[in-house]
Image 1 (cartoon, rainbow, N blue to C red):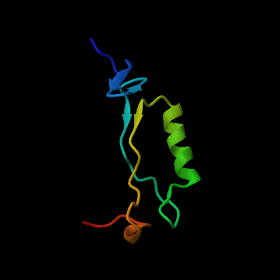
Image 2: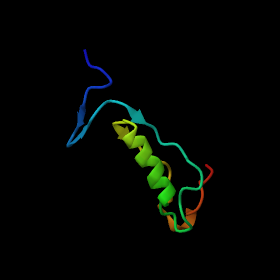
Image 3: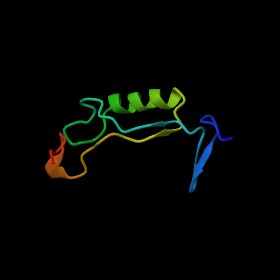
Image 4: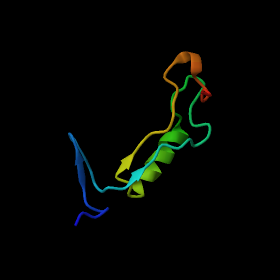
Length: 73
């Protein structure tokens, strides 16, 4: 039987376990140019050191027109 603590291989990547942290906005974690801040890196490092096998990064601006905020649909 497969356990959550078992490694998993997805294509060329292998995660140490099957625990995944979903993308969640962590507040103002991007600078005025839309780049992740040190705060964002530190937060995700804590998640990784805590034992999560896969971390999906939160929303970030990729279009200069929408940098600095989430665009309402």
